[in-house]
Image 1 (cartoon, helix red, strand yellow):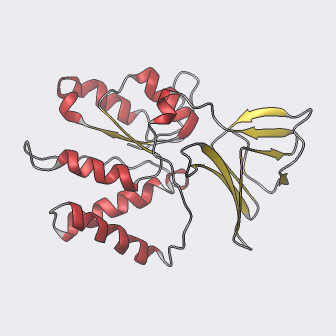
Image 2 (cartoon, one colour):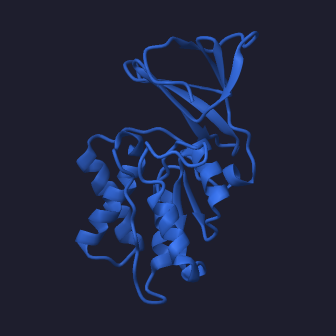
Image 3 (cartoon, one colour):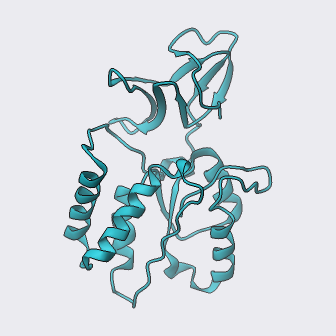
Amino acid sequence: MPGRGGAQMSIGNHRNKSDVETDFVEGNGWYIELVRATNSCPVFILFEIKCEKVTANKSFVLQSRSLVLPEEDELIRHVRFAQKIGDYDSVQSLLQQIDSFISRCLDLDPGHRFLLACFVLSTWVVDRLPIAPILAIVGLSQSGKTTALNVLHLLCRRSILTSDFSSAIFFRMCDRLIPTVLIDNTATAGLQRKLFHLLRSGTSPDIVRCGWSQPYRT
C-alpha cells in the first residue's frame, strides 16, 4: 500500500504508471477509501477534508503509481463496505446513535451496550490504535449471541461474518482489506486453541505472518 503523506494525487492518464492494488490511502488533507457503490460494485472515493468534496472513481494516480481496486473475489464479495458518507457531529453523538441502534436489536444493560458501541467505533479507527481490540460475546444457547454478531456486522467497518477461520484465508483477506472479522463460535467450538492463536497473532500492526504485515480486527 502506498504510504501516507503529502503526495499529490489526481485522476488522470494511467499510461506508464505501475498499478498498485490498495484499499485505503491518506495524504495531506485527503484520503481515498474503498466503498461499495449503490450498484454493488467496489469503487474508490476521494474525500478532500477542507472543502468536504467527494469524488468517486475506479482508479487514481498517485505520483508514479496508479491506485487500482482490489480484484473482487469470493472473499471480497462477502465483506460489508461503507455505502455512503455522512456527518457524525461528535464522538459522543456517534456513540449515542450506535447505542440507540443496538438497544432496538438487543436486550442488554447500558454498560454492555456502551462496550459494544466503543468496539464498533474502534473498528473504524483501528489503524490508529497500538492494539486491535478483541470482543468476546459469551452466553447460553439461544441467548442472542448470533443476533449480536449480525448487529455488529451492520455497524463495524468492513465486517465479514464467518464460521471458518482457516489461517491461509484469514491472512490473505486481512492483508488485502484489514476487515473486521466476526466469528460465529458455535460452529468452531472444538477448535478453541487454533482460534485463540489466530486472534493473538493479529492484534498488533507490527506482527509479520508469513509475509503479511497488516493487522486484522476481530
